[in-house]
Image (tube, rainbow, N blue to C red; front, side, top):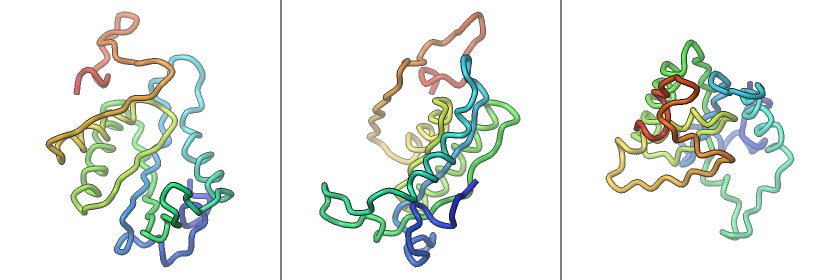
Length: 153
């Protein structure tokens, strides 16, 4: 899955888990898409594009990667949506408990469920900003109960 050993091709000394303040977790999952498949290709495309990204951040007037960015192994659990959500939840929570700034990325909205659960268990005051073309907040879709929808957290 990784196109290089580090995120955005940053130097290895900024990518070790011990020194990194930031953890990126790719989740190449596409188990609940109802229209076109391909969301599982999102993390790979993101990582490939990151290698051509400008590393200077105008907002902070710094090169944020120097805080350390660890690229975790991809979460590839895909036996069921519930199993994927549980894997994302457990792994995200492990990194949060190590006091890391965790970002989970993929191409499918359902990966957010485990992420939000992990953050909700670790922080008393949590706000979720949900940006999507569709809210995906219904409890039922085409007669199927959506156990992993955001409204069921």
